[in-house]
Amino acid sequence: MDGDLVTRTATSRDAAAIRQLLRTAMLTYCAESEISAAMLEAMTESLESVEERIRNNNCIGVFDGSKAVGTITTGITNVPVRYSFSAKTEQFLSEFSQAAYVSRFAVIQGKRRVGLGLSLITASEEYSKQCGCEVMLLHCSTVNKKMTAFYNAHGFKLIDVENSRGYPRGLFAKII
Image 1 (spheres, one colour):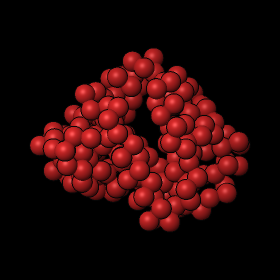
Image 2: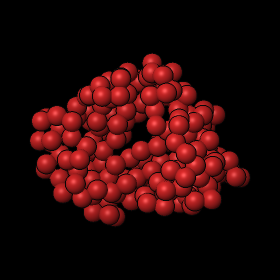
Image 3: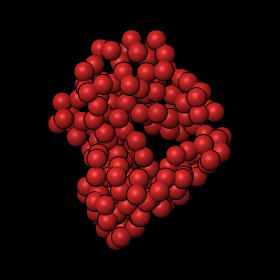
């Protein structure tokens, strides 16, 4: 990984840089998932909502100077079944009393495949364990073969798939 990069907990002051990174990275995600950018909340969220997510969750950023080149957000819930969308999912989630939910995971195109994504997932897992979580959850388009392969390679398993957002969106879980 590049030695000039700084990995740290993001603050509200980083919201604009993280928002820009997400919008850029999600264009690739959309293309690889065969979905319209209009279908993703990350493409339209306000600066204020990014600031709020940073304040209310564990948001890690990787920075090259003031430019965000990687990010991941981990939220903690004591009600994992809130992510249920079927009886199958509810049954799986009912076994856990606390879960981490990973969102807004992105690495800028020029910094992919150098270990940055793995370091962010690892940091999220460490945080989740420190918080007493038993499982990590995330959603990903099941059409996106690169991302689903990445998640599978790092211990996430597909639990179920739903189409409420207009594309096949899988719930992935990693027991920790």
